[in-house]
Length: 248
Figure 1 (cartoon, helix red, strand yellow):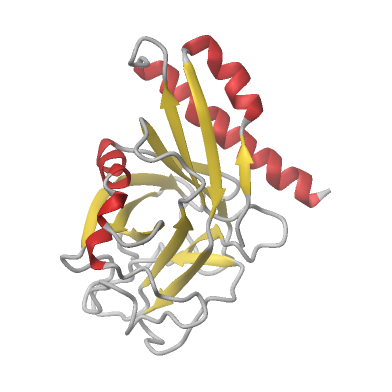
Figure 2: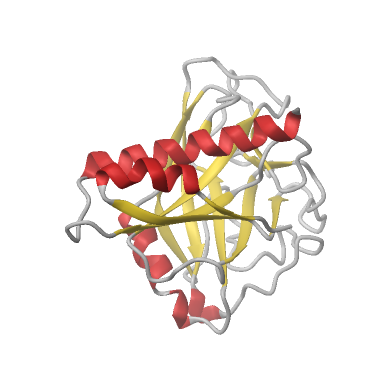
């Protein structure tokens, strides 16, 4: 499943802060993997799940997301991943508990983007550290972290970092235009917080699945930090609007 959306609304508004050429793509395929069912595939589910269980448990869940970047201009100035957070209905959490998540990229030089949504499992997922609830092997690059408070239901996560910008600019190191990101929760569960976090997948019926956006900053060669924040906030709003239109 792939949609290309040229963000004309964004470009019109962003022109006031000197930003142009914003584009966004929806994931080609995505799936979560489950440590307790290491040979089972979960590529047909509507949610991507994430959990770091209590130590010694096998109930870890990590998400794999792949994009076709052929419609994006690369290299570019800035990139962002966009996720819709959805209540998974699994487990409990205190409303003010902070959960930290890490974002990883599958190194382009591995040419390991041939995994399939219908075939990926805990045991065969590329660069998955099967002994860790949130870790990956040396062929994965750490791109940064983000936080969710409580369940985060209805929240739109817009993740960007300098490490991600560098990772995306080097996509030419691989043999194709595909790029894979991995999401893992770092915060461990405990007896009072057993919750499993959910993000809308490409199979979700009313919300957009994971999205990847690129921006080109063209005015004066560099856009101030606040302008970038405006851009990503607008992208999050448009992602919500897409989901609202699909629900009508």
